[in-house]
Every structure is written in structure tokens, then in C-alpha cells.
Length: 486
Ligand code: FAD
Image 1 (tube, rainbow, N blue to C red):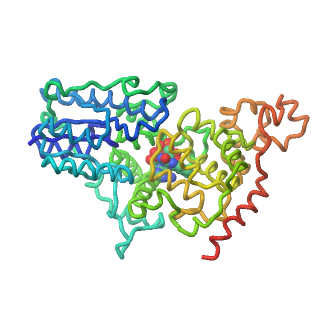
Image 2: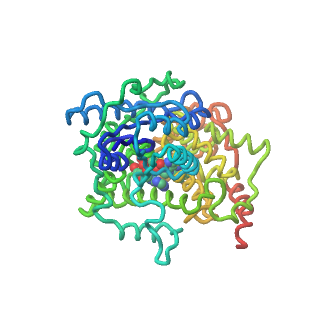
Image 3: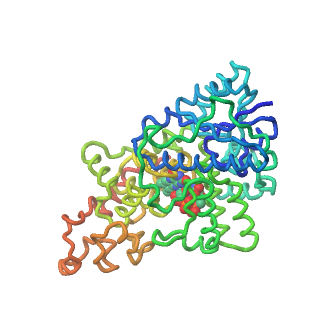
């Protein structure tokens, strides 16, 4: 009769599957979020994601209060705990006297291990843990090949995904009609959403960026995007253009429902919007990489295609110096460097640039994709193991439906094509601002007279290239030769 909803990657009340199921099954329902010290302790003390979560919880707390109040229940609020979730959740469930805990699936390996522990501890107290799908449209083994296997190529997966799609898959999981079942916490158990300082963190520059938090922030971004979704297909590839939705962090933390987004795209696609069709395809890539991780959990550590782990990546002092230059945006390739400044300053990086810098690290610098993957994991606001790993293994060619290894992005032509007028480069590398557009992609080709006119001292104000792309390309083809035999 009593249930606890443990929110993790679904920080919203609207269209929330776990909350829907709990409200359907029980007469008194509470919601908790745990700031899990197992996850938080290793993080630097200023982390935009922690601030994003904290502020989104304040928004969620307000949503819960308002929803219950509209149904005549006063004093409802989000319960927040700060500790090890493996013990905090069972302890709270016992204190509340619930029969069941509800949560949405999180298929990352560490989350699965955590949930197994929580399930065991709850079972010892006679409490059930019910988990279900919320984070993706189709999960785990819902979309399989005709012979029952997992798809390893995107296009047939996407076709099967679209064929399977039914209105019910995208229908909202209703919460509001049952909101009278939200219960005020018993005396002594109520908590307010802690400040950043209370959980041991410092503020970041999150609020100087255009990333509004919480479900209300997600709705702002969605409204803004839907007005330009028709242009998505053409605008999405140019980092200086406001083309994509910027909703990835919201999808990561579930401040907006994936069903809602897929519905918006699907409806517009039926209405003939090419942009909506391309965008839906991106949402399907997200499902695709989640099912890859589910069926092939080894990708979290190793190459999807094992032969790619025979590659000898560059290592030692020289490689470490090159890696540091990549991280800090000092490779001498302006588009790569501007992209790295973008992630370092904002926690976001445009998709085209993620592909360019990942290709540059693996195929120009010869550095193991796992080092880049780890760097992104600590710096991206939208870091998601499945999508990040998928993206890196795609760029390194080691992944599921990856680009062939001999396809090597040229960082200069990528720059000429996708930032032709250097607008993005100039935003992050102001020292190059006065170079003419045609020279900004490869400043080392500029004549001394051009450099003087642009008041640029190469090697001082901006580095010379750390590698020569043509030579690096040859070295990469050699390095990857070990995979050719198979
Ligand atoms: P939009 O273009 O508006 O796309 C809408 C949504 O679709 C995104 O929010 C995202 O949820 C999903 N999506 C789009 N492209 C992809 C993709 N290729 N794979 C999976 N999902 C996708 N995305 C993450 O969410 N987290 C990551 O950690 C991540 N790491 C990446 C690393 C590399 C090396 C590469 C090449 C891509 C990575 N991506 C990752 C995918 C993609 O770059 C981002 O999802 C996108 O740039 C986010 O911006 P947006 O929300 O404006 O995207």
C-alpha cells in the first residue's frame, strides 16, 4: 500500500514511468533522490553536472509540491539523501514502512551492480524493488533481428525500430490524475533540497551558459528547438549555427521524457518535416547505443571488435605531451583547438566537433580512444556511457557500425567545410580573429606578410601544428594494418 520512488535518471514528474507505476499500485507514495557518495566522491569539487542536478531537484521538488497541492495534499516534497545509495535507499524504505520501491532502469554496469545490491538489501527486509523502462523508447532486447539476435548495424536497427513503433510506446505515463496519492513525509524524515555547499561542492559557470535547468528549462529549450526543427537536417552540422536542440543534458538526467521528444518528432515527420525525420534518427542512435551496451557490456572497457585491441597506440612521454596538447586545445589545428576550448569552458561540444576531435586524437595523434573517452566522461555535461562509448568507438573504427578505419578526417578540410567563415574558431580562439577566412583553418600556411597583418606570432600567440596530417595519416594506416588481416 505504500511505495517509494527512487529517482535517478528521471528527474521529472511529467510522464515518469516509475512514478506512474508506484501511483498506480500504492495509496501512499514518496519520492527520493540520493546524492550518491560512491559517484560524487571521486569528482572534482566544482562539477557542472552536480550543480545541474541540484538545481533540477529544486525544480522537481516544486513540481511535486504543486501537483499534490492541486489535489488537496499539503506538505509534499522530494526527499533527498546524501550517502551511499546501497544503504540509504533500503534504510529509508524501512523507515517509511513501504512494501515496494520503484525505479527506472539504468543499464550502465556500475548502476546495475548498485541496483543488485539494493535489491538484495530490500529483499532482506521483505521489500520489493520494481524497475522498468523509462530512459529510452526501446530498451534491451525489444528490437531484435528476425533470428532473435541483437542488431550491430544502425540502418536495419532503425528500420526495425520504426516498424515496431506504436502510439502506445510514446504515450505519456500519466502521473497527475493520481497525484492525491503523493504523501507528505512523516515527521523527522522530511528534508529540503541541499545547497551545493551542503553536499561539499562549489558553484560552477553553469548559469552563465544557455543551459536552463530542470523540467522548466528543458521545456524552454524544446520550445525554442521546435520552432526551427524543420531546418535541423541542414543546420546541424555547422558548429557556429544554432542547429541542434541542446537537450542532451536534459535527456541524460531525464528532466524531459524521451517519449515526449520522440512524439514531437514523429508527428512532425508524418507532416513531412525532413528536419524532424533526421532528428528522430538521432534519438534512435541514442537507443541503438544503449542496446549495444546492454548486449555487449565489454564495450565499456574494450573494443566492440576485439581485433582492434591489437592496435599499438602511441604511449610514453611524447604521447603524453600530445595528449595534453589535445586536452588543452594547443594542437595548432584551429578547429580542433576551438572545440576543446568549447568543452573545457562550457561542458558542451557540438556533435560534428566531437567526431573531428575524436578522429584527431586517435588517427592523427595515434592515442588510444579510451583516453579521449575518459576525458569526455569527466568534462561533458551530457556524459552518457552508452553514447560516449559509441561515439568514440565509431571514430576509432573499433565500434559497432563504426566508420571504416581507412576513413580519416582531414582536420583542415573539415574546418573549411563546416566552419567556412571561421566564425566558430574566432569565438574560441580570439588570437586568430584577424586572419582572413581562407587562412584561419591552417595558419601555418600563411605568409609572413599575412601573419604580420593579422598581428599573429605563430609559435607564441598560437602553436604550430603538433603533427603533420599527411604523415600522421600514413602512420595511422600502418598502425591499423593489424586489423586488415581479419
Ligand atoms: P541534437 O542534435 O539535438 O540531438 C538530439 C539528441 O539525440 C541528443 O540530445 C542525444 O540524446 C541524441 N543523439 C544525437 N546524436 C547522437 C549520437 N551520435 N549518439 C547517441 N545519441 C545521440 N551524446 C550524449 O548524449 N552523451 C555523450 O557522452 C556523448 N558523447 C559523444 C562522444 C563522441 C566522440 C561523439 C562523436 C558523440 C557523442 N555524443 C554523446 C552524441 C552527440 O554528439 C550528442 O548527443 C549531441 O552533440 C548533443 O547535442 P544536442 O542535444 O544539441 O543534440
